[in-house]
Amino acid sequence: MYGCQQVLLKPDVELAAILDFICSEANKLTNCGIYYARQLWFKRRWLIGKYDLEKEYKHHLHFQALHSQAAQQVLRSVSESFKSFRELTKAFEEGKIPVYPKLPKYRKKGGLTVVSYPKQALSLKNGLIRIPLGRMVKTWFKLTEFLLPMPSNLEFKEIKELRILPINGCFYAEFVYQLPSVKADVDKNRALGIDPGVNNWLTCVSNIETSFIVDGRKLKSLNQFYNKRVAELKKGKPQGFWNDELASYTEKRNRQMRDAVNKVARRVINYCLIHRIGTIVFGWNQGNKNGIELGKKNNQEFVQIPTSRLKNRIAQLCKQYGIRFVETEESYTSQASFLDNDVLPVFGKKPKGWKSSGKRVKRGMFKTAAGHIINADGNGAANILRKVEIQLGLDLAKVCRALLTAPSRLFIWNSKKIKSPDGVLTRPEVSF
Image (cartoon, rainbow, N blue to C red; front, top):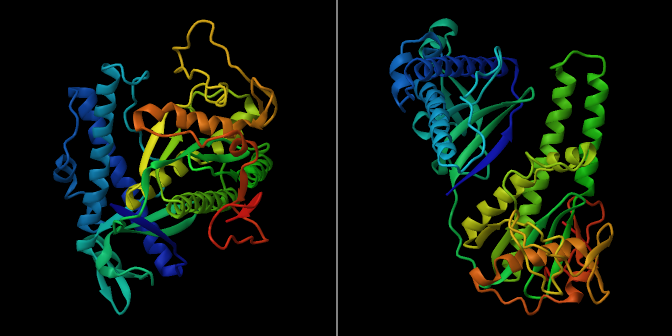
């Protein structure tokens, strides 16, 4: 299992020119590879092989402008994208996906793309990572290498790959390294159900008498501010308008989202480790962001919250710590009443005459058949556990009304740090 660490580079003028050059050449080489692969498909219905592009372009100007191993990685990524197209085509023919996939498209002319260097191409020189340049660069500019700082929290021997990422006018160095496996003391019978949302980004209910909500309102506010600034800057401009100010706002917003994803995922995993929870059940409907219809405003809010990235990050950490991660569809979990043990149908297979025993009375509140008011998202998270109760052999006897009435609330960013000495969520509001 591999991990990634991104480091923001602050290059001087000379290094910035080198990074811009190699990322530009990688972009041009990518388009060359895409052109050749597309022509093979259009003329002969052939899909490119893994090494075919390297044989075709090894004497090409853009190939030789990069280090040979970096150029090979660029062309192999093109081959992998066409391989994915083939797999998606098979899935469409078998009826597994509803829409016929599109061929990989060309990258924007004059743009920049990722350049990858395997460990074999790198070396350590006086505490700095030496990255070699291509033959043509040596001939044109008399440069053989450039140097990047080595992260203090990594060992050079741990690095498997180094990527140069051009993002919104900035350059990042991404280090890929081997993650150690951790044997955590957890119990698979202890489970945490997670219901994703917007204002309540994650609502979590366990079968060991604990529950909490990760507040998403700050994240929503940051997205609203970003959308407002983008709308102001694009007002009166032609479609596709972009400038440095827009790139700066976008980069800042993306860093905030990335920070939130990492903090929340780590907090959820730490919570499971403290309480020895060995199973996480995440409610998720495939394609729910692509086909969702919540109105213009709600669509924008829901789609821009990086819940999919958060889900993947939690799944990655679960694999590292030996926690079982289960993804289940969440149809009717917000409508059915957990305390009344309503039947939970699958979308499209709802029994005729099915009706919930309870109902939502206000935003965020759910009323059961007995008239009890509970948290609506807590009810949904408990029902997500009930979706897989039999398959996983879970005991939900301790998921009671008190647990669903007032879950603790966790904040991603908060100036007032509230610390829980033993890690147990006992207060109505707990900070990260």
